[in-house]
Image (cartoon, rainbow, N blue to C red; front, side, top):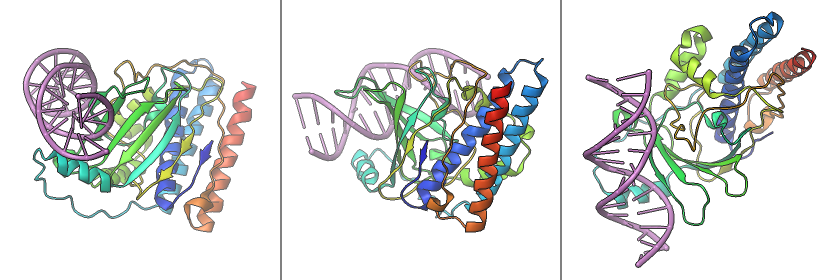
Length: 281
DNA sequence: TACATTTGACCCCT
DNA sequence: AGGGGTCAAATGTA
C-alpha cells in the first residue's frame, strides 16, 4: 500500500504519515468499539501503544532536520515574487486514497495547515483547495499544499506540497512523541476524530513524486487540516472489521540496518497479530 | 476573543 | 483573455 521512492526526505514524510494515521486509526477504532467488548478495546489500546512505540523508534532513525532561520517577513503583495518563489520551491506530489467519499481522515498528514482558498479548476470535476502553514505569519513558514479530488476516482486525492516547513513544527512534534498519548490532549482527540475505523480495509495509496526537495519529517500536528467544508468532511462509516496492510521497506528510506530490522519486525508482527485477533472477534 | 473557513476579487503568467 | 494562485473581508466556531 505504500510505495516509497525518491530520497530519504520523501520516505520520512510517508513513514511519518503512515504511522500517525495508524495510531489515530487505532484510537478511533477503540473509541468506536462497543464498551462491552473489553477484549476488543484492550486490543485497540495495545495497537495504539504499539504504533506509538513504532513512531518513537522511527523518530530515532530520522531526527528532525535542522532548518535555517525563517526568512525576514517582508511579504508584501508582490504576487510575481510569490509565483517565482513557488516555482523554485520544493515540490512533492502524493496521491491519497480514502475509504469513502466522505472520508478525508486519511488526508491528514499530521501537519498544521490553514485553508486560504479554493478554486474551481478548468476541466476538473472537483475544486482545488489551497492550504498554507498555520505558522506562516508567526514563523515565516512558507510551506503550502494543494488538495484536489481526482476526476476519475472520487476516492483519490492529489496532494501537492510546496516548500519546506521552516516553522517549529518539527520540534513540537518531537516533544509530542515523548509525551504519553493521554497527555497529547486536543491533538490526539482531533486525530482520533479524523480517522475512520476501517470498512473493508483502510487503504492509503501514497505515491511520492520527488521533484526538488522533501518536506520535514513530522508526526503530529496541532491544528485542523481544514478539510471540513462539505467537500472535505470528516464523517466516515464505522465497521468493526479492520484490516491493515503494509509493505514498509525501511531500506528504501535509507535507515540504519539495525533500526530497519527492528522496525520491520515490530511493525509486521504488530500488524499480523492484530489482523488475526480482530478477525477472530 | 482568537482563530479558522469561505468566497469574491485581484494579480501574474501563459 | 482566461486560468491559477493568493489576499483579505466577512462569517463561523469553540
